Picture 1 (cartoon, rainbow, N blue to C red):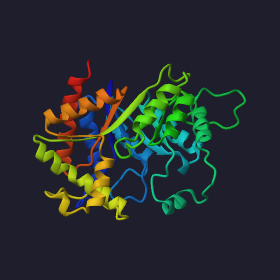
Picture 2: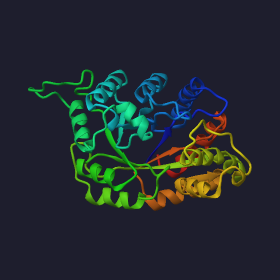
Picture 3: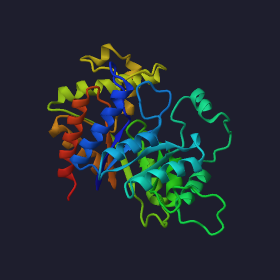
Length: 330
């Protein structure tokens, strides 16, 4: 089992987007040194606390500043884009950084509906995501003799494509197309077990995979003590509550008493969203990650964690890497 890292390029309160993007590159180099397999970034728009909206640009920045770690999108929200444009972008990345680029595809807009309209201009009632995925994959394959449209760069790069999801739709599509599947259990775990069962039981072997390949996403908030880790976690709890109450902003500073800052209904919603997590000292994180691996048996674990202080965030991922290196045989 491999272990990887998802970075949303958080913009903490008191910092700028330039600092957030500098932190992303620093964290990617840190992750590479720690032995993480992949480093993924996500497409979100109109989010003051997330700096990775131009995802392919940030991926190029990270890939250019590292040397071995795979870098990719977790994910690109395909309904926002023409498949040919994404094929050209990721074909260019794969040409510049061969053997290191991944493309995870999501079906959601990654933003509110007003921003989605600004991105797409014309909103279609029909859902063409499956057809768009197939079209995009075809652009990465070897060129057909009669192909009138090609992605240049892109054609022949065979960029690995993943399906991302938080419902049974993505699980069914990934299984039908024989693609690897990653579930967004780090923020929407409700359908996790049903999605895993659907994906594994209906998977059809393909030119890409002989057997299902499932990635579990989990939050990790690790520190030297349980109390410190719970303190660091309060930034993401506040961020979830702010988003759910229609007040998205920069990543809040941690607080000592989260119950005094976040109303009970919103705090309960944040706890539900963050239920697939490991929070605590190295010993606690070891136990809680072990429980997740035993329960869900993923082929790969991708961890994330929105922590306000950059150095504390690096320390959290270092602790997680130590734990995972012990849990995963070389």
